[in-house]
Amino acid sequence: MNRRYFKNQGGYVVILNTLIFVAISSFIVYAMAAPLLSGNRAAGEILASKRAFIVAESAAGDILYRMKKGMDVPSHETLELGQASASVSVATEFGGRSVQVNGQYGAAERNLRVSVSESVGVSFHYGLQTGQGGFELYGGALVNGNIYSNGDVIGYGGASVTGSVTVANASSPTANQSNGAVGTPPNSILFGGQLVYNDQKPQDVAQSFTVSTTTPVTSVRLYLRKYADVWMNDITVKITNNVSGRPGNTTLASATLGAAQVTTSYNYLNVPFTSTPTLTPGTTYWLVLDTQNTWNSYYMWAASPGTYANGVAKTGTCCGSSWSSTSPSNLDAYFDIYVGGQTGRISGHQNNRISIGGDAWAHQVSGANVTGTMYCQGSSYTSKNCDTSRPDPVQQPFPVSDGNIEAWKEEALSGTVTSGNVTVGPWPNQHVTLGPGKIEGDLRVTSGGSLTVAGTLWVTGNVTVDGGATVRLASSYGARSGIIVTDGRVVATGGGNFVGNGIPGNYILVITTSTCPTGSCGGNPAITVSGGAGSVILNSQKGTLRLTGGATAKQLTAERIIMDGGTTVNYETGLMDMNFDSGPSGGWSVSEWNEI
Image (tube, rainbow, N blue to C red; front, side, top):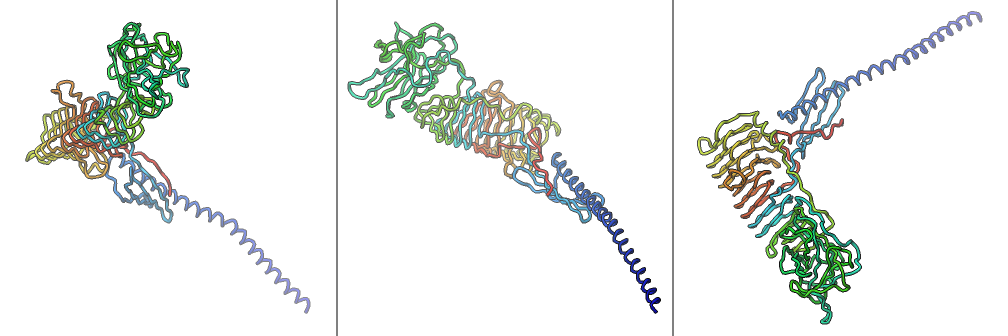
């Protein structure tokens, strides 16, 4: 009985051990196989993700290639590559485009965002920019923007500029004679006023000098102050001849130093002469400060004893024979005589001043009401004093290079070449589309005709738009701007008008290589515009541009510019980053490429 019981119990043990062995073996096999299966699934998912990314990158690259080549770019598109696909969405943003791509392969997705901006080539930073020929505006002319000129800016007759006006020196003068330094001088020469009846100062003061060159004298610099900040008479600064050791009656150069420019602290004041005399080296001349006596204040010219070897200071009344030694005697005034150079100036009339809404910055400012800061070295008949903290501005290059123009001409040659003159309007040539192309002759749009510019145009002759005709850009330009290049004159009159295609930031650049009025031009400017001109940028970097008769434009650039007759330039900030349809100034650049 007991023996049978143990026998049966031993069978149970064998079965239990077998089950335990199978369970442990199964666990070991699963533990070994699970990572392999998981790794295989992960590898498949990674491969699918890479395929989704590749198709997304391919779709983005295809869109960028189309943009670069100027091809049509759809707002939505789907690209398939085997079992992978990419959905593309292109949106227009300020200054460029945004490309978003969703790449898919099975359940895997990858998303890209590419920001593309218009690259900058030709930039018009000023509403008006001129060369050394300078700029004249009168007759109610208005510039809504800034002016930068490499030559003098002259304005009167209600002329106004809402922005800043900057005039560069063609070349800076150099000091030929100098005496004095910055700081508190050991002595002062008093003149031009009195405090009480028995305290009258000498009316005028003079300093003799010689020069060492025949280079014309262009300006002087004086170290002056006044006793009290009250009204005083202006000072006429003169260079005169020498008669028996005193100033003579022959005035060789003169300029006005406004009393308001002289403060109660010593400052150097630069006084440019309106005429530039050539003096004889080694000959004695006199620098005379001529004014009228005033009450309650007087002028003080810094001086020191015996510090200038080529002259001496005297006091008296200009320009007679009554001159005396200074007190103390043998004083030499602090001054500099500048020769050479061609300094820039902003100039209006003392009773009819140019109005400047921003800053004025030039070597000399006269006849101007300036709202902003007036950076200059000398001034007269202005609304405020010079701020002398800035050096004179320097010459700036024109925005368009000869290389730009040649590239645009090459672009025009990719189209149709027409021999002879082309006239658009009247009927049956009322509506004509041209470009790209070259016209070997004149182009005239007249009698209500309409010319649509579909590509860059190069005209070897003159361009005339009159009789109520219109030149406009084709809609295919989008927000980009177009170009007309001519080697002749440009005349827009009689209601002739240039317009864009209706998209903001879209303009026509009309540029001429003409040097008129020099050459065979009959004295006419390279560009003449009277009447409305619309969304046009006019460029005559080698000649003169005249805007008259109520004409308007977006930007003007020329060697010399004349604005009169109620004309207006309405500068737009987008011109700082202009992009044209062709040539070196157009294009796209990738500003951002991210996975999202």
